[in-house]
Length: 235
Ligand SMILES: [Zn+2]
Ligand SMILES: [Zn+2]
Image (cartoon, rainbow, N blue to C red; front, side, top):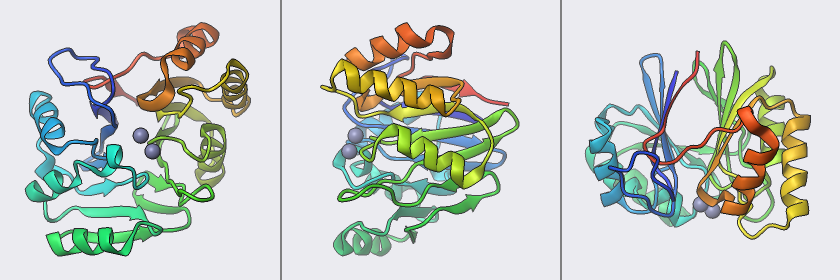
């Protein structure tokens, strides 16, 4: 399985344009799953092009939550790909769902945890107020959890992922939503994730610089520095 971050606040591959938002392509066997679409379609398409990604090959799009920095690029994806199935939180507005359906793709509304491909699952909608889903991938070396912004809290999202699929967690990648969080809150997140037995952490997007530094300091080798253009291979 390969993960390729297409869109992030920071560029790992300096040919790419960094911008506030997140999007990650998962290649799982013959399947292509796009998790979130970044904020601006033009930047998403340009970054994807530089990485040699053809978004027309994507079978499935998973939208974590309805913030513009995660769904803003969807219209551009749909222009290039009218056959992908879009998995979105059922709590998305009716007008958003109607607009997507009118553009062509099939829409699957997610409420509870479910399987979306052979080794791919969603946690279902989590959190009160703004609902968010995370993507769970099952690999031989453990689960990979991809988060958008982690508004419901990264520790509870990873806990739910573990509970949904079972097994150990190899990697958590995505936004951990700790920008502006106190040192105590960041330490609680580090301890919570360690308590869940997470082996590798790749915080990006809305995690915040201070939180990233603290994760790196506490985790050492278990911390992975990522950004747009980072490719991660998992066996
Ligand atoms: Zn975000
Ligand atoms: Zn958000």
